[in-house]
Length: 164
Length: 398
Image (tube, rainbow over all chains, first blue to last red; front, top):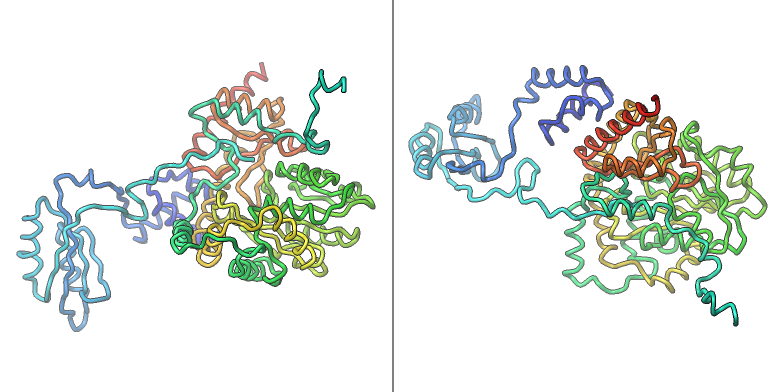
């Protein structure tokens, strides 16, 4: 396999499990450990891989309140949505952010310590920004799935131990 | 009269009584008595059936698709099967009279044998192979004739071995590639060679291609697609392995009308039809199942790379499989037979593998390990196998 397709495979493996050992990645792709490590470094340097994070259940969010906020904004002449989007994304309360098609423009995921904190962030920091036309806030109540991982795992069905 | 008192009359038919129960039954019982066993002995996908297929099954129930279907199977499913056969296997069949949906490939194999074999006919089959082949042939009052395959030829049938085994009574050549238990596959050149052999000796080829869609690397057309072969080939395939649908029990056979017609007679009197809801699920698998199938295939391929390397690192020479989800490492360096190896490994390290002897005499000296297991299970199993091998090698040297 050439470097490009190897990198693609490595990204796929790490997106499934970011803790996959380099040795296993190397063996899965039939390459040396050194080469696998080099390719991962290259992916990080090229900013294809931007970081590694854990998928957690609601239990890990104790003391946190999370919300999705839809934001309608006024795009700017030269930069479109980028200027306002980059500005908003700098707030540490903003966990993730996308430009989306549809009725509004930006979809933010916000984290705070309480309902009040999130509400006041929206009122005092978001809604009052130049270019922000409207917001709608949805508090998150329960997580069912993230990054392809179902949080309530199906009961494991016991397979036969030997099947010819 | 007098004999019946000391020895009760056996009601079991003469050709059934001598059939062996599956060669690993005792071993299976032993595995079942133990907890915390990591099993590499499971010949079915570790993935659950893709959700869209399960959902389609429920939808079929909801809308009451629960009656008999045509004996041959739901025509929509047969059309989809024939479309796949054309696109992927390179051979054209008519859904109306050249396709039958069966209860797994096991039933397809059974009824095709019954449809084509006369008592005393000989069937060439290759070992190591799936456990049902010889018994299925024998149940038709026909004669199973084994042709051995060997690791040095990547478990591919060789012409000279076939020529030695063929007789004027030979009627059928039974093929299973990609192969359970070895993972061997056929190149296009191999297929041409086997097709020539079949034509030369005027044989019917029954090609069990259940693992065809679990081929790693280059795929070629089915042997049925080679010139002059469609009329002398019965192509068997199913959904169990490539779509992780073992419990659904859906397989199929593709062949020219006279053979399908004969198979249909047996099928209609014994099974009537395959389960309607399972057929609905199979249709969904063919219509929308390509992405999850490819995802599972990619995962198996990577696991194969890992497990083959680990076995070779441990010192158990392992051939790189072309398909299916089995590796068949050699254990000859251990100085024990495959059953002894499997039993000791089970008792000492709680890892279950299947002794190669279960798949025929020439499977001796090997064990079958399935990599349809999670990577964590494979990692742990290989760690234990490594300790096991090191320990026994050390004792051997004392």
